[in-house]
Every structure is written in C-alpha cells, then in structure tokens.
Amino acid sequence: MAAGVTDIASDSPEIDDLLALVRDIAESELAPLAADAEERGEFPRDSLRVLGRAGLMSLTQPEEYGGGGLPYEPYLRVLEEVSRHWLTVGISVSVHSLAVFPLLEAGTPEQKAAWLPTMLSGETLGAYCLSEAHSGSDAAALRTRAERDGGDYVVTGAKAWITHGGVADFYTVMARTSDDGHRGISCLVVPADSAGLSFAEPERKMGATASRTAGVILDGVRVPAGHRIGPEGAGFPIALAALDAGRLGIAACAVGLAQAALDAATAYACDRRQFGRPIADFQGLQFMLADMATHVEAARALYREAARRKDRGESFSRQAAMAKLFATDTAMRVTTDAVQVFGGYGYTRDFPVERYFREAKVLQIVEGTNQIQRMVIARDLVASQR
Image (cartoon, rainbow, N blue to C red; front, side, top):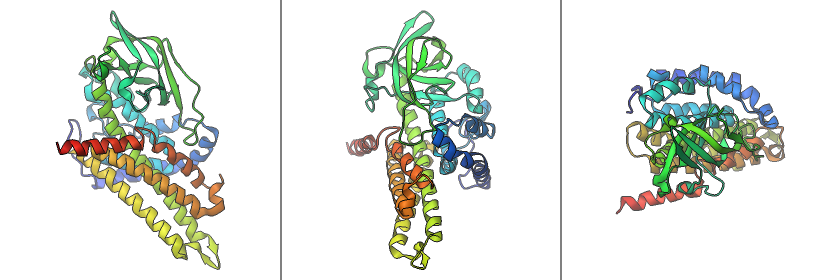
C-alpha cells in the first residue's frame, strides 16, 4: 500500500456509499448535460468543478494534501461510473490524474505543498504533454527541448493530441534536456499563463467532441528550474509509470461506456415490439446481449485485478496493458452491437448509442494504441522467460 493511502477494502460499506454518491451526482449533474454539450462541442469545465468540490478529482491522493487517500481500485470504479453517464468527463478526470501523477511520484515536499492543494481541489485542471506529431507511440523520440538559462529552462517545441490543450491551468511537459536518448528527457510543470505558450485549433474529432484536444506550442517558454519534477533526465521513467496508471484509467472509462451501451440496448430490446412481442424474446438478440454482458464483466474484472496489483505494490504493467487492450476493444464491440440492436434508430442521433459508438473508437487509440499494448504484453511475457 502506497504511503498516504488509507487501508480500505474495495467492497467496504464506505466504498458502497462513495459509489452511491457518485451515481447521484452523475445522474443529476452530468447525464442531463452530456448529449447537448457533445453536440455543441462545449468543454464541461463547470462539471469538473462539481466533481472537484465533491472530492472526486483527488480520491487516491494523500490526505495531507487534500486528497481522499483511497486505493486505486475504488477510484477506477468511480471513474467507470462517471464515464457511464458521460465519457468526456471520465476522460478528463483520468487525464487530470495523469498530469498530477509525476508530482505525486517524484515531486519534492516543497513542490507538493505548494501545488497539490489547488490541483486536487479541482479548481485547477492539468494536461499531460508527452505526444508529438512526429513521434506518436515512439515517445522517446520527442524533440521538444528545454535549455538551461540561469535559473530557468527555456522550452521550445510542440506537443500534439493533448487532452485539455488550451483549457488546462497547468501542463506537465516532457522535454529533452540532453541528447542522451530516453535518458535525456526531463519533466516540467508549465503554468498556462506562461509567456510563449499557445495552442493550435482544437481537433475536429469523430467522437468525444466536448473533450478538448489541441496541440500545445511552446515558443521560448521560460520555466523556473524549481518547476522540474525529479532529477534532470529522469522524465522518461516518470512518463512510463504515469502511462501504466493512465491505461487503467482508460480501461475503466471504456467499461463505463460499454455498460452504458449495454444498458441502453437491453432497455430498448425489452421495449421494442416486433411480431407481437418484445424483440428481447428472440434468441438471436438474446445471444447478442449475453455476449455483450459477458465481455463487459470480463473487462471490469481485468481492470480491477490490475488495480489491486498496483495497490499491493506489485508489478502491474502487463496487466494494465491487458486491461486497456481488452476493455477498449470491448467498448468498440459492445457499442457496435448496441447500434445493431436499435436497428435503423441506432444509426440516428435521436438515440445515445450512435454517440457511444463514435466515442468508443478513440479509446483504442489514446494512452498507447492497442497495437502498442500487445507489444507491451508480449515483451513482458518473453522477458519473464529469460
């Protein structure tokens, strides 16, 4: 169990009460806004503040800094519940946690005391800046540079596909401080109001349109050396560790989305009548629902077990990759089948499964494509035999 984490069983009454609170907030504050905000592409900043005031943006963080001190597994269950009602908000919670992760893992006590209280309250929102247009999954090939100049770093480069680009209050940036390959990458916290920091136009995406995704441009941005997280050159291991945790977050989001699609399909099948009876009475459709439900349960079990390994302090990189791979593939499959259950209506924007279908696709890409997850899994399997 990590320092500052409360030893609470994941199936305890306290966690049940927490999940009930999350469900109430999601049903009253998130679900009624989701469809319209996604239609208009409006980023849900106020909704994230609601979650922050309820303590839901900092569940796993140490209590001494205003966090909830919970293990990772119940946090992921909360993330699933949020995503079941609005995926964009679930992704934002996960990405904010990703942006805070380096500070929690490698920050100095002084840095934590200065920054964590506002970060964990939800009043400030973070973005995680690793990807670049030319490097993509080859993160060690990043080119953004941070040159030391007295007491500052001068950062120049561009980051691509950044969730919260242009709406975040701080940016956790991986930048090159030397040419020593992956050992030449350092981690810096860049305030959003830094001179020289600007943003590209938001990407025009297939789904999750309310989630802001934009390039981050750093043109000679001066960042105090005191904003470096960890030693110089230690950024890449920090980035990889953050991605392991982030992959579990995306897995939980995917399960939430898949559950929403399954719920909608089941309700529709029981209500829709053909040939004088509900279509749920037909065996062909029953088999579809059964397969959908089985995959959702299996994905849920996979991410929860990976999280329990993390909470026990065990290696979980392989399990995180498996959970991300299976859960996001499940989300794509289940949302596709949900559209089929709705028939022609499922292809229209009058019903939510059309949106779920479009949203599912991105989950197979973010936090490392599912092809990368397969590489991570296979390499770990082979390494364990050598």
